[in-house]
Image (cartoon, rainbow, N blue to C red):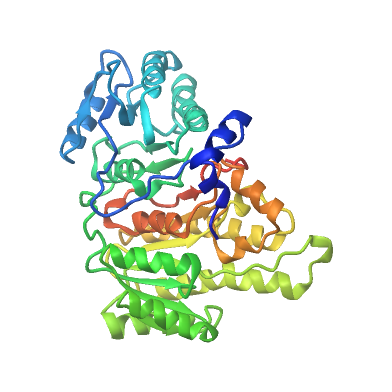
Amino acid sequence: MADRYLTAVNSGVTKTVAKKLGLPRPAHLRRYRAGDPLVPGPVLVLGGKPGVPDAADDVAHALLGWDLDVRQNADADTRWGAIVVVLTEITSPADLSGPVMDLGGALRRLLPGGRVVTVSRAAGDDDSPTLAAAREGVDGFLRSVAKELRAGATGNGVQLTDGAAPDSPSALAALRFFLSGRSAFVDGQLLEVGPAEAPAATDDSPLAGRVAVVTGGARGIGASIARTLARDGATVVVVDVPAAGEALAKVANEIRGTALQLDVTAPDAGARILEHARSRHGGLHVLVHNAGILRDKLLANMSPDKWDAVIAVNLLAQLRINDYLLGANGLSDAPRIVSLASTSGIAGNRGQTNYGYSKAGVIGHTRATARLLREVGGTANAVAPGFIETDMTASIPFAAREVARRASSLQQGGQPVDVAEAIAFLASPAAAGVSGQVLRVCGQNLVGR
């Protein structure tokens, strides 16, 4: 559903009136389009600790390899397309003052749709109190910076675990995603990246040669995921219930993939998915658990059938399919499993105790599955959408819909493609160092984290 308010406050007389009245003025977001530059202007790379510039130099050198205009000294005239702050070398909260003040000065010249990305280290169990404070503080700092940005700009962070270098392929893949238009509705998020062997990230067919299965692929977010994976080079199998057969076939034909009519709650769902992928395409590399339903009721009015149906589709089906594929060695080399969670599973939502439980459960099994896939060089991650413009959200009453749209730093709902872009990144070989993580696609929704 179109956001008419967003269109109105970005055009003509309405734009002027909204500004005078101090009304929310969401901006058109910079989304990925083939042929567009990675960022809309020069990239400023700031160091994290005076006298220890090596990490910032390494990142700047890597960005130069992407044909970007990279600079390490701010001036008073340049409008920045992105600002990368490398904080991997800090050891004390006292080390932050310099780069923070440099960033503050440069923010005044950040272009619309610009990006701020921190590169830091995650706090570890063995860190001293001082080191842990320095590292954990970046979390609150980055999320607060993101809330200050305007004109469609976003702030996100790459958070390295010990052993991961700032210029490693996986770290650079996450950095590239956050700099690009692919992350338009990802804001205020820190993504943990560990050491892993991975190819360099590119925008040209990163999923070539990979076979992907997308459940719930007939319409909405699922169809967008299928289109995006196909755009990135994957051969895609779209799965949905027989009742959605016509729409499913249309999506499959559009992306030159194949369709599988299947209820994911069926006991043999995993076997049928694997048999189809192997017989038609030779294997299965990427599994996207997108199928899901809503049966909203206040808990006092919840019936067993509404509770059980949501748990069966949203959670138990994923567990059963994963168990079968792992037990049958059904996943091909360097497999990827990406599951759809939700901000409702993180912060809760009124009338969604069943849905919130199922999506929190998805987060739980994702972290556990990541450990199992590690042995075969695979990853498991979850994407947690916030308010996304779909047929489902279009049915929300007007007032509640408008509140939900504006309750984020970007002051608007996301598009299905925003969820799809995050999934395509996590499904890519270059994201090998990202596993067991939950990436929120919510415009920094003002609930939970």
